[in-house]
Amino acid sequence: MLFSSITFLYYFLPVTLVAYFVTPRPKGSQKYRNLVLLLASLVFYAWGEPAYIALMAAQCVSAWALGFLIYRYRGRRVSLGFTILSVVLGFGGLVFFKYTDFLIANVNALLHSKLGLLGLALPIGISFYTFHIQSYTIDLYRGKFVPQRNLLTFATYVAMFPALVAGPIVRYPTVERQLTARDASIDRFATGARRFVMGLAKKVLIANVMGELVAVYKVSADTSVLFAWLYVVAFALQIYFDFSGYSDMALGLARIFGFDLPENFNYPYIAASITDFWRRWHISMSSWFRDYVYIPLGGNRVSVPRHLVNILVVWALTGLWHGAAWNFVLWGMYFAVLLIVEKYVLSRVLPKLPQWARHAYAMVLVAVSWVIFDADGLASIGSTLAHLVGVGTSGLAGPEALYYLRSYAVPIVVAVFGCTPVLKRVATRLAAHRAFTIIEPVVVGALLILATAYLVDGSFNPFIYFRF
Image 1: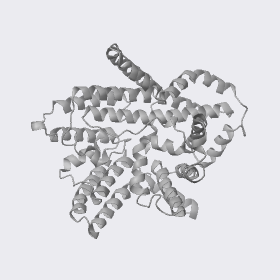
Image 2: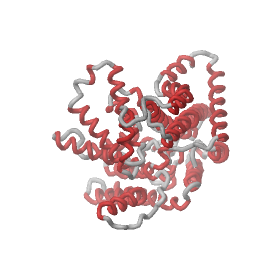
Image 3: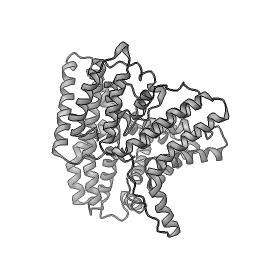
Image 4: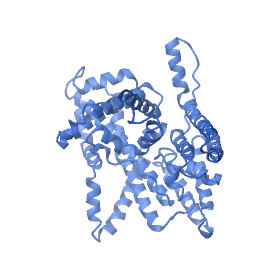
């Protein structure tokens, strides 16, 4: 079930909200509301794959139980053993379901064998809730907090549906207090609903429209330079508004229920370097790999050769986290090389360049990365990149490319402006005027109606990160 679906918007969510807010809170206790939220999350998860509830439940219970043992024996070697066991169990499930067929296919290709693929369906959200769980057990080993004694409360943290499918990756200390004491006020409901609708509009009215252009390019015979660049721009806008829109919806929903989750995006397309880009894009994932992989490997407090290895390892894992395919590994390695070059070659050059030049440099390299990310196979990467520079094309601009440029010019311009803080700054200034209190709900309501109309009228509603 997607947030951007009629089923979720007009059936699941209203029922969940009513059940949640009519549930009493004796002496401020959140245990009954946590139960409602947990049950709703299980229904949400079971909507597409009910069988995999058992997997998530097993991961949750094992981590909860191991957490007590990790904490009880902290400072002793046995605590490390229990932590390693938790990591093996947690990531073992992720590897089995997400990467088994990828490994079998590569063994077959390498050894010319004919091992059968398992054809396993990927459990929804497993990449996210695995990271939630493992950050909990690892941080317990580090002594950052005490174990959560209530299994229901811990399960609510793991399975909470706003962050279940596409994050952000939430660490336990972020919501530890909120799980037992939170404020689900009218004001928080209003701001959360506004954030949710804005995210829904980004997803449905921009990302889906850009996705239509991407889909057209992939079946077109027009190989012109213009069409290749239209595709790259459209996909870059699609994946940003798709993922950031979904994150906005998650943060808005969480706020409605009284939770404050961490921001996941900070206008990444205004970045002036690749390093800056990754401080702004999918922030919760980047910080997770930094704190649980990069720093434990030694970070940058090691020799240069070892530092290079650390970066390559982290980005190989980052690529694989996004998908079990070689183009994702190449995508991760691509960014690893760029970050190494920025660190050791361009660190003194980039700051001296004008802002526009640094921004152009970063955006061109990011655009190339999306070609790798979205490739159907390694062979298609080279042909698309060649078309971008005019090699092997049908010309600079074919009739089909010109048609779609005219058709999508306005949505592209709107999307580009939406990637910048300009609209937010305008809204902040308008907020000082009394009329804004009337205009804002009207605009939010109109966006909800438009998004609903689009969902009712159209069937194109993919979510790129749903498969991760």
